[in-house]
Length: 300
Image (cartoon, rainbow, N blue to C red; front, side, top):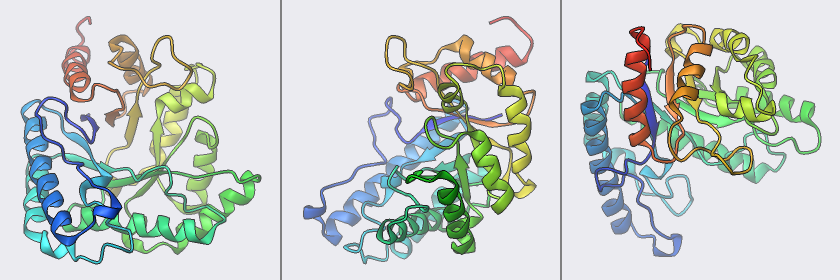
């Protein structure tokens, strides 16, 4: 069971997701920014290994405007050596990697231009992971998309669009349940039609069900069957409710008892857990320490 956090390490003073405005675009600016991002990514990964955090979500901003028409620079060949170097470090230290395109990546959109932009974005993400020579366990997670007035039609459109994707994208794609539109059963339906694995977002599940956690163990027994051997162990996203905020607001820092109760509800299955907690590595380090104590059978 690996513990991780997404994109930003707040402790080391180095950012692997620097970007710039589109109007400022130039190849010189791009090269400078990507060099910084790759250097910082390596620093973050080394710091994570030092703290036994072996699951990390790489920022989509690693290469700014990578899927935008303005960017015709061959970044994947220009930075090939550095990307392979980082990939070697990832493999040697058994780090699990994921990426998560933004909410505008909607392959089931009825608008053809949105669909095409989404495919371009997925191609970029897959190319990053391929350039690092990472195996199929390095995943790209997306939401199913919008309902657009007809959920069944939108699910069918997702299936058709998914099957039309290039295999080098499909082998990395996973879908996650959300807290408003597509619940776990919707995603399980889509798995039956496509084979796409389901990344279980525990907080989205709780919010969708009005705070009810009683069904989590049974749900996860179904979810883990969607992951084939070559996909690696299932990935899980975890967060909890920020007290005093509207439902769905992610916690600022980890609620240890809630976290360990969620782990227990996952039914002794080996999983890699991504903590979507605002203070990032601080909570991840605490979670790892408490989890070690919990799994050894000691009180927490």
